[in-house]
Image 1 (tube, helix red, strand yellow):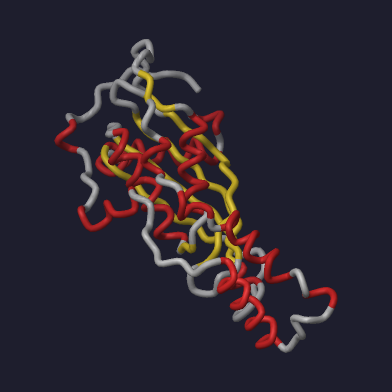
Image 2 (tube, one colour):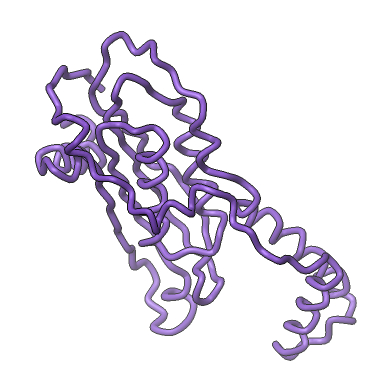
Length: 222
């Protein structure tokens, strides 16, 4: 992408992160059961579903499910703010948009605990320092690997980057398909939900919002 030198509004124009939202910068604290209790809960669900947890094909299922949950919900053991801790100030005067497009993720709906599959597009306007690109994708992954709503996840990603990096602005767009719509209830496959969150310059200057959206949709027009 081309670097365009621009004058941005002073930092006082930035959108501050609400105090009540800052808690997601830390690791969630929960009173977890032990592995044996978790496996017993899976056995109960298997019985409730109408199957026999002692039959050959299901004997190891409780242990496998617990192990899978450790991976699928590993975001609870990680602090997203820590991923953004190391930044680089040698940017050779670069102050234009940094955009990471098409970050794939898998999450789970907090209402039904079924998958959410999608991709995130994240941009920020540096204010003298940048962060490694993989760190942005890592923040997306940490929040995805928790029980989520798409709206909350979008705000969490933007809020964390804004609060930790203090850039001139952050833009986040998430596109995802929700299996709670595709597999149950209304059962409409292929429906996509789109959410956005903007902070700082992206929120106060509509032309920057539009440039972000244009670059997400067609990077040749950035």
